[in-house]
Amino acid sequence: MALYFNNIFFFLLLLLITPNLDLSLAKGCFLSPIYQVHIINKLPSNTPQLQVHCASKDDEIANDYLDIDEDLHWSFCESFFENTLYFCHFWWGSMNKSITVFDDAGSCVHHGLYANYLNYCKWEVRQDGFYLEMYNTTDIKNTSYFMYHNNYWS
Ligand SMILES: *[C@@H]1O[C@H](CO)[C@@H](O)[C@H](O)[C@H]1NC(C)=O
Ligand SMILES: *[C@@H]1O[C@H](CO)[C@@H](O)[C@H](O)[C@H]1NC(C)=O
Ligand SMILES: *[C@@H]1O[C@H](CO)[C@@H](O)[C@H](O)[C@H]1NC(C)=O
Image 1: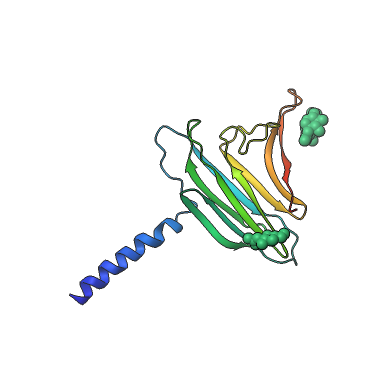
Image 2: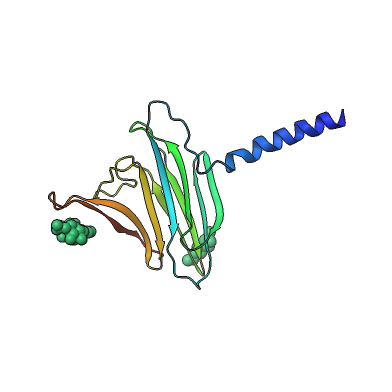
């Protein structure tokens, strides 16, 4: 009997920890595209470690330290009718900053300047702030992606 309860306990424990294990696995989406957010640590080495906490209203992603070049990423379903918002809080040395990393299926975040037609949002955390990959449509003969300086540490 004790063994039986042990197994049940273990099974419940597994259920509790499993959502945190499938960060990189794409979830199946019904009638809506899968989006991904990538947060890449591009800070200089030999500086304090970057700590990151990312979440949405109902999805806890991570509360962790990132190594240089490490890519924290996750997937979710999003249609134009949904309004998912993911934010991340960053700590680096004496600085900390909270930014929205996704709230728009057409441009990753609302700001109006550039679009993003990819199904992922790529962020880089650098010494001078937060960069988001965006599509430059200024020159229709030579459109290209570039890292847009979206936000600052302070
Ligand atoms: C973030 O930094 C500010 C000062 O810049 C400080 O007042 C605040 O407590 C810090 N917040 C967190 C959550 O670390
Ligand atoms: C966008 O493209 C135009 C034309 O090629 C260029 O002048 C401009 O600097 C680009 N903007 C960015 C932010 O790369
Ligand atoms: C297109 O834009 C990119 C980035 O702005 C630039 O490096 C490249 O030289 C441009 N190519 C042409 C053909 O203008």
